Length: 188
Image 1 (cartoon, one colour):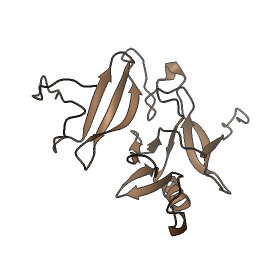
Image 2: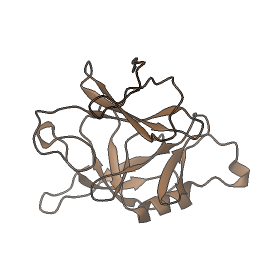
Image 3: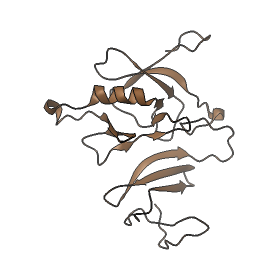
Image 4: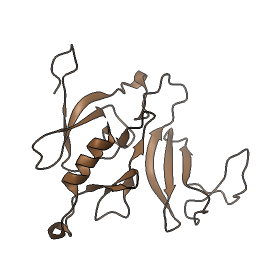
């Protein structure tokens, strides 16, 4: 963890501790972990603490980053058209998926706000389901949060350079079906 007590900016970089109260001017913290060659992203919460948002690979020698998942074409990262299936769904929702290996061992999805709205409608808990343990997606202003009742806080979906929403955590019972790539036949 970040164990630097001096909080004065040094070369434009601010040094902080993860267990220190969040300065109200800060929104995110990027922690470079040389041992795992990754960057851990933390976001400030309303309660003045840091909440882990995501982890991305740190690969300065790689070429041509792929928009969204943070992977690189040299490592097999690419977007594939797919349908996202929710429990008890009768139809799949339009999305794209990167099935390459990511640091958190979950596939990375990307989809439009319209798909996110459909997920919100399909997963919103009713009064009878108030004590349920299944995750749901909710809209918060122009952003979306994935919420689990038994976790500390929601997982904020980030956006890629194309403005599409990214879901980079495994969600129990949400599955996918790869769509055929034009000219390549069926993928399953």
